[in-house]
Every structure is written in C-alpha cells, then in structure tokens.
Figure (spheres, rainbow, N blue to C red):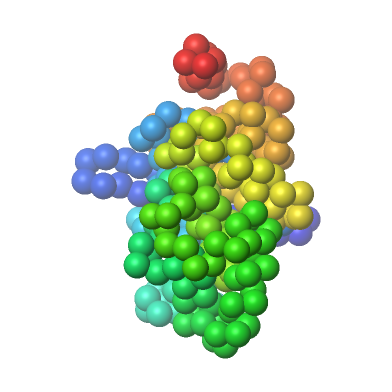
Length: 257
C-alpha cells in the first residue's frame, strides 16, 4: 500500500488544563478533500495549526509527502528544525484563515507577491504574472491595485485564497473560511474552493457549510472534545451518523437552519 500523502499521527496538544487534541490521527491521499465538522472549541482549528506547525503538537507527528514537518529528514528525523527551516516546509502548505489576515497597508497585488519573492525566490515580474493569473482565476482580475478595506469580505477571502495559491502549495488548509462572511457572500468563496477540488488540490477544510461537505468532500471527520469520533463518506456521516455525539451535533445544525 502506498503511504498517505498527509499523515497526522496521535497528535496531542494542551493549553494549560485544556486538552485541545487528544490523540488525533488523520491521513489523506493526494487530491483528497476532507471536511472537518464539529462544535466550536472541539479542536478542529488546532488540528490545522498543528499540521502546518504554526502551533506544534506536544506529541505525535505530521508528515506531508513522507517528510516529517518540524524535523529533519533521514537520520536527523529526531532533531527539531530551526524556525527558518520550518518556514521552508510550511511554504508547501497553504492556509486560509477565518479572518482573511491580509496586510491592510498592501495592495491586493502586494499581498500576493511578497511571499513568493521572499520564500520562493521569484522575481517581481514572475510573482506578478503568477498573482494576476490567480486573481483572474478567483474572479478578481483588475483589482490588483485595490487595498483590502476597499473590498467586500467575500472578495478579501478570495484574495486570501489566491495569496495562499501563489506559493504553489501541495496541501491547502481552510479554517472556517466562510464563517466571517455575510450569507450572500459565502457562495463566491465556496465556488473557488470547489474549483480547486475539481482540479485535484489536496484540501483539509474545517467548515460549518454542510452543503460543501456533502457535495465536495470525499470524507467527513466529526470532531468532539479533541477527538475524531466518526469519519466516513459524506453520505454516511451526514445522513446516517453512527455516533450519538455526531447525531446530536447534526440535529442542532438542522434546527438552526
């Protein structure tokens, strides 16, 4: 059997007395889209932050395409890497946050080209060409000179997705990318994410958008109290959940809608 493209094994993370991740394991094949659902505070965002080492796990390991994140390779695999080397690894993992995290004093174009130039070594011309292609792809061609404050929330989030893609990552992490948006703006962001999935991007998506999970994800994982308590195809987890905690969560979601 080939190794999974992404492997998170027995991740544990605590903050004081609070256990955010309690032995979480999750693997993904290349090109797979996994939707992570669950109540706020159940550990979903912490999982993403541990995978890209923005918040290293207390124990357990993360591998992307066989490379252990945060550590050296081969005989040096038990040696933690310095932050500059972790940043190099992190460049392979794009992340889109709930609150956009765009630089407000940069134009849209500047937000996209800074990291590829600094981390990937692209020339300004190369980075600009790549950025314009991506802005066209997310429906924002012609907005290169705008500042984030001049854009709607949905447009800002599409810029954030384009910025992550500008690094040509091999894995994309989405942390509730639509939860800060007005309802009428959600669809434009979901459309971009669906197009990425159709193009074969490997994606791990924390979301409350059950339609996206049902129609786009290849698997759904339900989080509760720092653990994945149920995982499977969307039709099974969302329509016929087996675990009582999954059943209770989905009933609450249906009532609220």
